[in-house]
Length: 154
Image 1 (cartoon, one colour):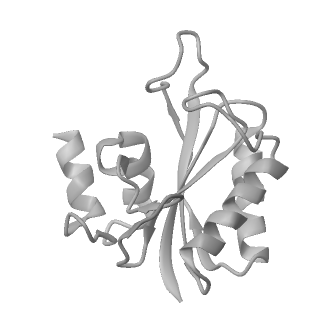
Image 2 (tube, rainbow, N blue to C red; image 1 turned 120 degrees about the vertical axis):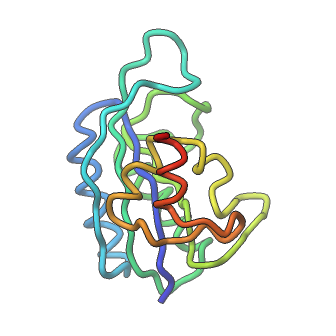
């Protein structure tokens, strides 16, 4: 079992419902001990003018498969929520699932970068994660989520 952290985001449709459905589908795919944070409404970052606010959350759970298998499950859940398989960066979406942490693993491949490279600078990722997993560590930075959160709020 590998302790995993995901960031959830969306700004089209019933995003809160999509988050809850994603948690159920992750459980059905084999993730256990799932915790879902509160939902945070945030202004879009790096998006076109007029882009609606996002709803963001974090989810943690224990995963038995590989990071690549989890990525495939996440992409399938995104498509089932109505997100196109091929989409632009920073565009409106029904659901976005990003793997933020995968235990103490550091993965840099063509399809996967873990820890997520921009997560420590993104309040909308760190705040919900700090709520449910403050002791998780970014292995590349050797810093706890709670310490990263503190640095973002000072």
